[in-house]
Structures are given as structure tokens and as C-alpha cells.
Length: 303
Length: 303
Image (cartoon, rainbow over the protein chains, first blue to last red):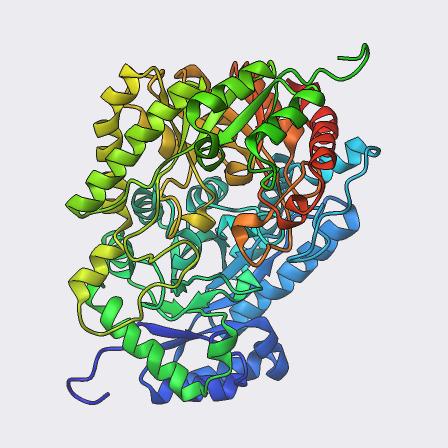
């Protein structure tokens, strides 16, 4: 690092931010820019295999801050449950192989949802019991708790932490029935802190009136496994999943939230994970540089 | 009402659901369909004047379940504060005149937001303090608490309750910094229950893991001022404000939430407030009939 240059040693490039780059290209770009780590998605890992992915990152002198993602645990039928458990065990093994202890979980939506972003089945005056069961949020959340308990021994054996991600309530129907950091902490509570943790992703939790106290609680319970940053921008993109922006382009108060995370004792990597078509259409090095600039202005001074 | 017909005496048509109808047309349609009440928006009230509006509703034999809306209390400059207080005092007088004790408040967004749905001002490396202040959610929420306290004596004098509406976190930046029912109750807590209450709007709060206990708390504290129902549909409309549907067309578990509201002791009207371009483009009587059918299937059995 050039003397006087900002310290990017805790900055991590989540590979979803540079979606069009291969794993090797993203790692190379992050390393050249002085980042300390990368966060990996399973699709890019599987392209080269977990062993090779681990070598690519290590050879560049970087850490793997997390693997995204396990989850989708809400199925109510035996086949769906078995499939979810098998897939998550594979993800746990992948996390251990690529060299991270943190496996981020997006837990899935309601049975009534036929797929992310899709409408519910048409209303009909019949089939009330089935209709009601498919929209039963309380029961769906209880199933998530059961599946986490199923996976805890396997995760512990492999030295991997199940990192529960609260998703913005905009995604409660179709992507994750964990909607607040408090709920994530409650789901984690029955299990050891080094086996079930939580991630603070600013995009998902910035609006929460209880955020400061929940971050403090996450730290005190030893569950603060990851800090992910990107901004909440308006107007929302047609696909709200892609409605994320560079820090500073939206409405989130990064200095304040970063100070809360720091005060809670977090000393890990700060991962930047931006889903945004315009950013995906931008040259990778430009994205990597812009992320570093915004991190330096809005996050780094508060660590 | 025809013998054997469902009891719609607690059903209220919010005039925003039939946006293209005048106040007189909406009231007429609701009365013919057997509804017991209407919820009024200030624009439709002001077209005829509050006294005339009161007479139209009373002549039809209906109640006014609520007036929408007061609020927009987040300004930080003296002129903005004075203007917000003046406008809300006018709304309080209007509520009393049209004959409802319940004035729904949508409290407004961040200073950084130039208008609902709009982007934040462009990022710049300068002007850090000003930029940070405009995105300070904690301070913005504190100003809302101050403005409520300013308005409480005037509301009490007029027999009108300030009904705080938690908006879905999707609107935290640009429409309302009250994002959960729990936060609304905390803001109400310093004031008497008959002067500051809360509304449970399914669209805004359905995802909240603490919803059952919060509704119970609202009832126990005597603050459960209104129950509004409409569904969360996917995909989101281009303007997410319009992304509401008839009960049953989306993902919300109305039987469960309605039972929670009933258990909390709520005996008031159930207001249906749907912003949806397709529904606005449908003939008023069809909309009024469909709302009644869905209410009868999904809400009424659980009251």
C-alpha cells in the first residue's frame, strides 16, 4: 500500500458487486486495489471448485470474509426439507473448504410464494385451510428455527458459523421470513455464538428503530459475524433486489451505523455487496475504485 | 340488510380505495352495499367542505371511521416546523368537524429526501456535516416526538386522537420514519391513550415478528384506534405506494392478524384502504362489492 493511502485492509469485495467478473478477475481487482478480503458467492466458487477458489484467494494474499449463501429452509414437505438440509450441508463444506467460518443464510419465503417476486396464487373462495397454511408466517418462521437446529451439529463439526441474515421486510413474502436483526438474534439464541451468528447488512436493517440496541446485543452475545454495507436508493428498481447503491448515493447514515458496529466490538471485515444493474454494467476496476472511495469517506473514519 | 347477508356494519370504505369517486359517490356506494362507515381523505373532504362532508356521511346513515391524514412533521427548519403545526391543527379541526375522533398521521421522511420516491441528492465528497444531518434517522425521529408533543394539547381540546401510522420500512426514507408498531407505541407512550393512538394497517406491519405482542400492547394501552386491511402483492408496482391488493390476492394472513386484533379488544371499524391503479380503473360498485366479499371471507369470521 502506498504510504498515506487509506487503509483498506478490512474492506472486502463481495463478488456479487462485480457480478460479471470471474472469481479470479474479482480477486485480482480487489488485491490490486488494496482490499483485504473478498466475500464469495457459491456460483462463482462452483465454477472453479472450492479447492481452486481457496487457492486463488490465498495466492492473492486475501481473506474470504464470508460465503453466500445457505438457507431456503422454509419448506413444509418432507422432500423439500430433505433437499434443503442436503444443500446446506454442501454449503457448509464449501465454506470450510474456501477458508471462511462465516456462511450467510437467506432463509426463504412463504409457501404461498411460487418464486421470488412472483404473485401469490389467485384468490379462490375454496381451499381455505390450504390457503391459510401457505401464508402462515408464524408457522413458517417456526420451521426455520427447526431447520437451524437440524444443521447446528454439522456446522459445528466443520467449524462453520450459520450467519442469519435479516432481509428488509420488502422481501418477507418471497425471500426471507427473517425480517429484523432482533428476530435473527432470537433464532440464534438457543445455539452457541460461534455456531449461529448474524450479519448486519445496512440495506436490510437501516430503518430499524431498535438498530443501535440490537447491534449492541449482537456484539455482547458474540454473534456479530459480518458487517455488509451498501445504500438504499430511490426510486426502487423494477426488481427491488437490484435497488442497491454505492454508499453515499442513497439514504443510509453510514457513519452512525458504523460507529454502532464498532462500539459493539466488531473487528472483522466490512463487505460491500451491491446488486445494481448499472454498477454491473460498469468496468470492474471502476466499481472497485468507487467502492474504496466511498468506504474511505463514509465507513473507515468510524471504525 | 337482507336477512342472511353478511354483517358489514363494521366495514369501512376508505375513499382512497375508490379514488375516482367523489365523496358523495363513495358514500352512496358504501351505503348501498351495507357498509357501516367510510374513512375520508382530506382532499375529498376539502372539495365539498368539512361541514358538507359531515352531512353527506350522516345523511347516508354512516359513520366516519377516520380522517387521513395529518403528519409530515420531520422538518428541521423553523418555517417548516411552523407550517407543519399549522397544517396539522387545520386537520384536527377538520376531523372534529366531519365527526371522527381518529386522525391518521403519516409522519414524513428524511430531510435528505426531496420528495416521495425521489433519489437523494448526489453524493459529494464535501459538505459532510450537512449530508450526514439530512440522513440522521435518530434525530429525525426525535423531531417527530417533539412535534407530537406540540400538537397534543390542541388535539385534546378538540376531542381528536393523533393516530400514528407505522409505514412499511420501504417508505422509511421518503414517507414515514415510523417503521414499526412498536416505535409508534413508544412515541405515543408519553401521552394519554385517547389523545395519541396507533393504527394497525396490515400492509405496513404484516411482516413484523413482534406483531402479535405489539397489537396486544396497543389494546392494553387503550391506543388501538384503527384497523386497516389490504394485501401485500407481488411483483411490486413501479410506484410501490400503489402496490396494494384486495385481501386474498397477496401474502398476508388476515385470519391470524384479525384474531390478534380482536383478542386485543378492538371493537371499531375495519377500514379497507387500497391504492392500486387497476382497482382505481375498475367501476366503483364492483370494487365495493369485491372488498365486501373478501372482508366476509377473510376478516369477518375472525372478529
